[in-house]
Image 1 (tube, rainbow, N blue to C red):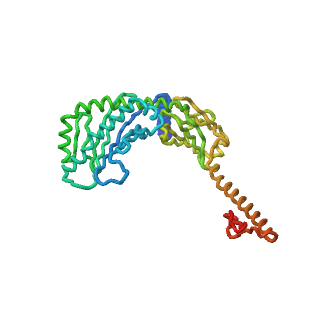
Image 2: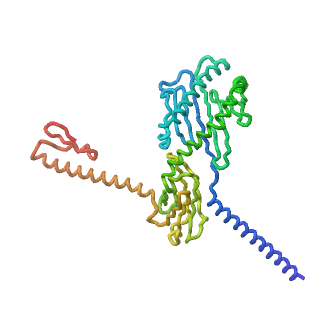
Image 3: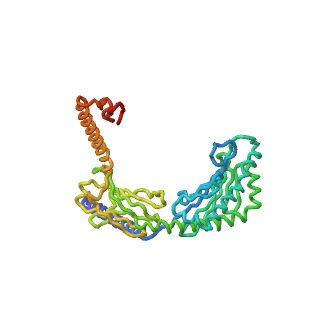
Length: 380
């Protein structure tokens, strides 16, 4: 009887283990399929195109513009405008070619029109808020964002006065809303005469500018070619970093191979970062001890639209910060040699002072310099 119960329990246990084993391999297979799809499919990307307009009224610092505007594309500043220079200045190399065309003149004229439209905002609001003096600021952030895969478009227009939200655009209903009681008058004024202007700019003009700038940026940055790949570590005992930089667009996959097979363990993937020139960089850290990766062959693989790059992990391929640290003792050694040469030179000159009184050495200045008096004049 007891044997029968024990065998029954063992059978149930084996069945449970079997089903768990099957479930594990099913999920593992799904994981491999999704991983393969992630390498093949390029996800859509949202592009954001805002302009921040700032107006200051009152006693301002000399040389500080009353009106300034900064435009960014995907978080990167692309131009600058203010009331002092009255010109639109490109801030990226790929924008400079665009700055010589007719569309740039049109873009500049639009900024000037925005300045003329907004220049009366502060005086009007000061009157409504019963303010007669002081420094006041009016800020506006407007623009659009666009999904390059689905074509979905959002417009935005937010206004602030003295650091507080004042009025904002509801793109769904094409009207302005406010939670500020004294902003209701402005909201009603804009509601009557800006609907067609809103629809024209945020649904057509803004996205047209955005697409045009994306085309210019893409044409310029894609000429840079495939990513630059480096293997880095802080010291011989630190984890090895596979660092890819200078690539565009941003979609990239960094993986490690161990003896020709995918290696996902002890690997940390860093965040995607944007460089100052608009390209991107990304890092994958291999946390395998040196004595282990020296036994097997580890390869860093970077897959990008422009091509695939592989770099075998070898000790002589790794760039280390130690090379920078070596510069300090080398420079110190050279400094000591120079000072020693000066010291010997001073001794030689000092020994000759008994036969010639034209010069002698002032020892107290060592090691910074040896000062000689020659014919009643001091030379260094």
